[in-house]
Image (cartoon, rainbow, N blue to C red; front, side, top):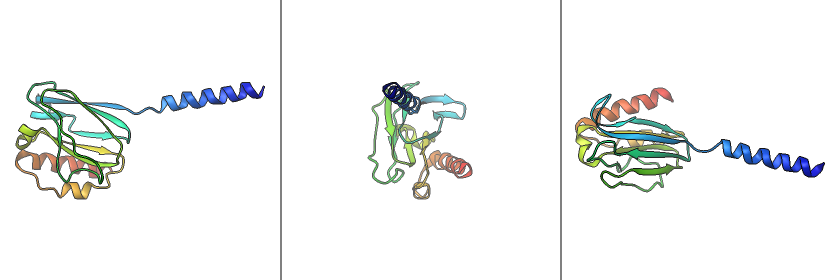
Length: 147
């Protein structure tokens, strides 16, 4: 009887661990989307630690790259190749600012919030240019109102 109970307990533990798997979030890189031209959709990504973000080059000519000063402490910068799918699993809590390198000035940026946005003030203080400045202002307002 003890063996049966132990086996049932082990099975329940394995099953519950399997149900709490990380999410995969897809982000499209588009020439034209709901918010205009040269956009990430969505441009505000809310994730939990351990979630995977998959950037899809739906239209050609795009990549994804982190923006200096817009990463949680200890996180290494990343940059994808052009026209290639890019997947990253994010474990560190905070906000991550990303851009499409050639379309940054056109406002092709996105903000990823993983768990607690503890570095939001520092990331928000990073100087932006072109249309990216207005897009990030809107995204940080959304993060602030949600938290």
